[in-house]
Length: 305
Image 1 (cartoon, one colour):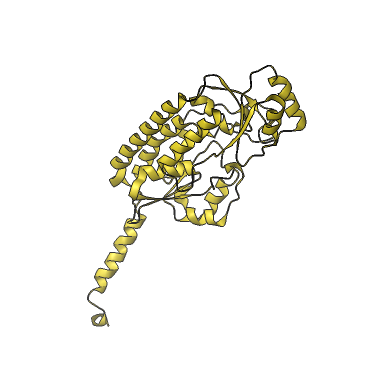
Image 2 (cartoon, rainbow, N blue to C red):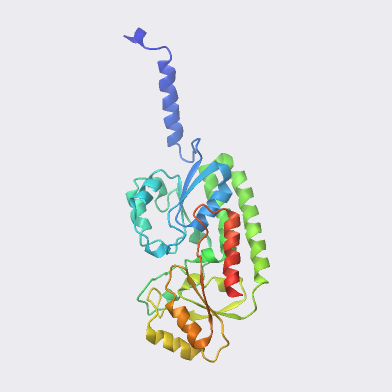
């Protein structure tokens, strides 16, 4: 029967075998590019800008949602099943849903400590989280404040380690990744320096949660407290009255909260003390490019003017 087989069959079988072999090799990227899944839009922007045409990026957390409180959706698992690389913020920001998604995705490459996993917080010195000092009935972030995407200087610092990690998965693109990461970091740092000049030195700031505390790391503002009595606990009437008493002797400042957080506490301080109350976006769009993140930085600064 052998003579009935097409002469091209051995070559075809060999071709399929080589294709499967290439697919299975660690660090190999197939023709469609590196498949990257990030937990947040800021990380998606960073991976997209570093990777250029050599990557495809999918963001899990909608930019208008608190990343603490997402559900482990089947669509998240499907995205991770095909991923070459998972990029997460870390420091327990995604602890409520990401571990379940990782273990249910059926893709061992993106598990913690494997070649397809990158935790941004591991490459940074984080601001101390108030959840570390107790008493605490809400979130606990023992590694530090996980909301460092609000600090462009720390996002710039993540660019090079992420590019290096991406380069291990696509060695032929490593030099291009590193070059783009350096340019991105320079652009972000330059923009942050320009924006810093737009904010009055010593501007008083109160935030709802500790998610905007990193504004104090790169802008000349002074954080004086939080609307939450404890991290993750909504502000009570008693706590708000206490804040009014404590802040009465200070000059008016600004109360800032995320758009997805309740505005009632900020409005109360506005009525009682004359502080400005403003809500802000926390993330760039899901398909963000670098310009979108730079615009978001301006948006935060505008809220402090």
